[in-house]
Length: 94
Length: 492
Image (tube, rainbow over all chains, first blue to last red; front, side, top):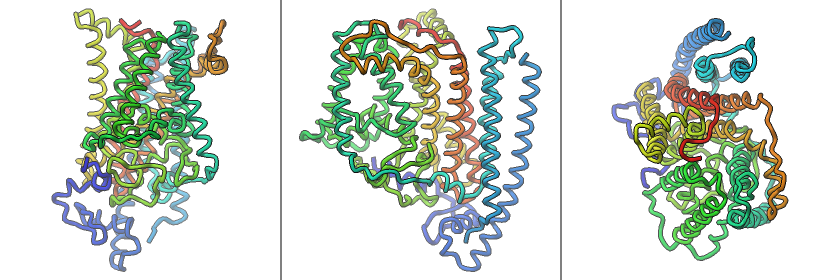
């Protein structure tokens, strides 16, 4: 089963159409510049030049803000779940 | 350049602690609710929790723990958890112990066949039934995911590989589908043919399996057969990956349970450094030991989850009633069971593939749905292990005196078989097993997502569809283990 070759399967470049931002070190394509910057920072940290490091820091802290907003929303959902279940138990478990 | 500084690490440890505490609180609530379900018939003033609320609580526990897992965003910490290994033993006596175990396995199989045919035809005391189901189906499988995969050592059919084998080249395009068909067939035989009740039928089935295995090994060669087509070896290999102990590079190493399931693949798709030397690759797959490398393996993982759900369903009063109701319309019972078995499996499988498809749409990634399904499928094995423990732990404990008696005196049936009666709180343990399996699976999926995606938000968002599918699986399973058991309709 040739297309079960794990490297091929896990590389997953089947849907790379429209992804124009290509990593110059490993050839993976990305849909946005930010994703490529993050990828290069995570996978090829030693290959970054000073400008790329700067860009990675910027994108990373921007993502950090997005993650903080995710955390706040997740906390909200947890609170709703907790009290929702609490009231459900008060009403239905007797 | 690593932005993870010490405060960040502290924050991630605190996040992990919050995850554990949250899970503990949630599961404690669920365990209490189940004890209440158990007591609701006994005492008027006990807390009675409606079944839908109990199932919803379980689903909420999964969803909440997925959200809590999302709080842990430190790549270094996540990678440390699944990459942790401890070297235990160099394996000096491995070959000798393995030969001894193989001889033991051969003796057990011979005794199962012999006692199955000539022993007393009573399932509770017959050596064959007790050893195959309490020993193999329950005990050995539990040992496989709790400790390590013993089957390759015990498997007596490995010896056939010493003969000249491999007359035919294994057709690679078949992948692991033959093993999937074999697993489904074995579960079908277990449910439908009375092997659990009639020792002579069980012995016939074992002989049939042995003939198929020996023929398969002689035709295809041991590696190709055991890796791609043998259902029992494949099931144990998949379960064994959950275990904390395994042989890596010829040495016995320990890992955190379940964390070997995280695929060893960098986000850019190249396989990372660790290579299992003990594995062969006759199917033309790469040298690195990917447990799941195609949709065939995804189907095997789903099948291990589904078969426990199916056998759980048909042995409940509601399941038996549903089958009887369908038979009342005039459908033949075998067709009902077949439709349920195959249809349910297809539903579970398509739900998982659908989750992968939705995930690729939701996050802007160049990875395909197939890649995500392949990467996240190993987390299902923890789920399967949790279900297996929930379904077989009590069974194994209560039958362990019978098993010990059968193993110590294989040729004489015990006059007075001893069976332990379990305390009521064991049903609470079952809920903990189902939920615990799902919770570890969520962590494995979280860890896998961090290996797949460059962006941490992508990793979090890619999880939502899979978590929904997991909630569905949990709801079904929690519902099943709360139902009263009965013997399946038309099969008793």
